[in-house]
Image (cartoon, rainbow, N blue to C red):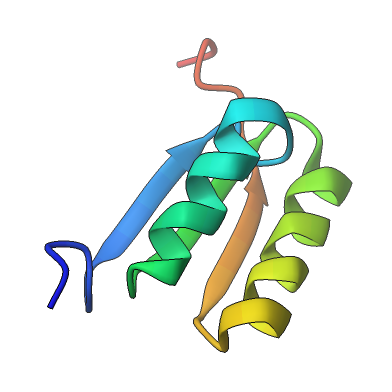
Length: 68
């Protein structure tokens, strides 16, 4: 059993690059993914990929972590 299994995991910048790869890795370890990205369509695409590939829940939201 993974440390991630059954936990909700927040990935900032989850719509592309390193964030995307990290999100896929954490989903394969059993996490429920929440993806934040400035580019919501990209984040939604990654969430769809995760759900399709792993059957794990994944959610995507537009978020600018630099703006309080």
